[in-house]
Length: 298
Image (tube, rainbow, N blue to C red; front, side):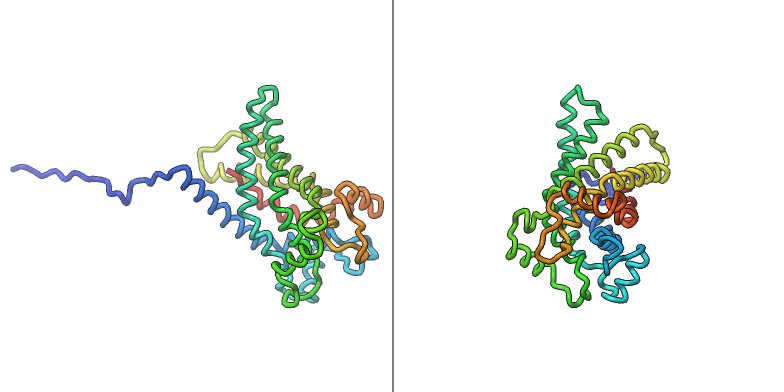
């Protein structure tokens, strides 16, 4: 008696699906955008606190905050709980193009610098990071101008003008140039160029020196720790440019008089009037905001 043999044919549903380059790029783009949206939504209050610290001046400033907790407490009492999310729309709108620009251009610049055999690999990675950061800064600066203006407002969230009306007001008054939507571009270039130069340089060079783990969880922790250190150190190095950016894009001490004009002029002025450590205002909320957020990169 013959026994029939059942031949198992894999169903199309269980076969691994192979995506084309365009589809894979679109999926990575969407995934990056979603991750950025979640990161901004969670971390935005710390970004706002950082801006508030950076635009406040010496002890005579009537709106001075003494600590992160003091800032949260005063904002909650005077401006309401929703005030912690002032200016959140510009970074949400900018996050996906920002990430796409940064990582796409980094890969292109990395390939470009790799052709020059006389440039050591660690230097090539740092230069690629610098160039990618400068490119990223040009893309996001208009969003930053609107964001900082909204974050500096001390009215309640309900009475604050919308993002669109704020952008329209800036354009109507000063246009798209260096007094309008591109105000503080040199400081933004410095902030993002320096950050990405150190971040990509540290991250990729250290990652290549630390052996990979076969256990996925252990290797994730390895990459997380390297990214955390890279993000923290990069934040410490670039913060003087961040302070200058906030001073230029934020409210001036005397209405109608432009005190903070250029990047290095602002850094020097803050140093002369408020001391060296004033260039590091907002460092703690910045590190708490960016350190964990930049801790994982593929």
